[in-house]
Image (cartoon, rainbow, N blue to C red):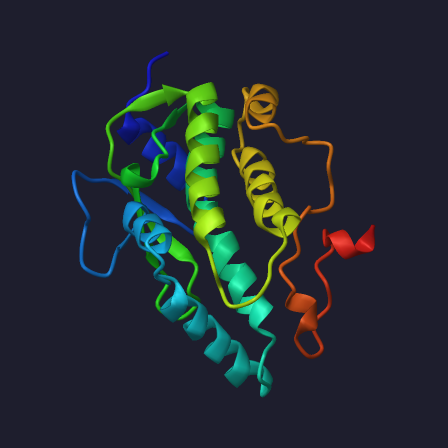
Length: 219
């Protein structure tokens, strides 16, 4: 069965309840974030996620009446960014065996105005690719972002790249029907047997907040 990008957008929208997905020929509006622009600016020495991290930091400060550890906002911003290409590639691959293109130029997103996570995603390319190609594109995309992400706090490579594996693993499990889940896990080099996350969001560092049940600190 062949699939169009529009078909795959519907699969994503049905599987990811907190995110809407659209196809578009160009950036849908000025409030949208181009993945290609984020990476290009980072690689040029800029810090395009500074305002994003600051908004998260300030919200946690107000909510918990403290000056939150900077690694919390830094890690949530990292996870939310890599979640975009990870969800697009892994959900569709698990459900259909193919994926939209997930190169930086093929994706844009809009953040939730108060919760700050990506709430809308635009698929800017009409190309449908095999899951092996999607896995290679995802690796190149996330590596380019993570290698140039400088959030003013040290995040080790296990934290950075483990977050991608965590998002991919979770994404493969999302569709109600995922006949290609095992093939997708092989293509994206993750184990569906793994229960605990590889990376940590550091949310436990906030007052009176317990670690997630899948936190790697429980090893």
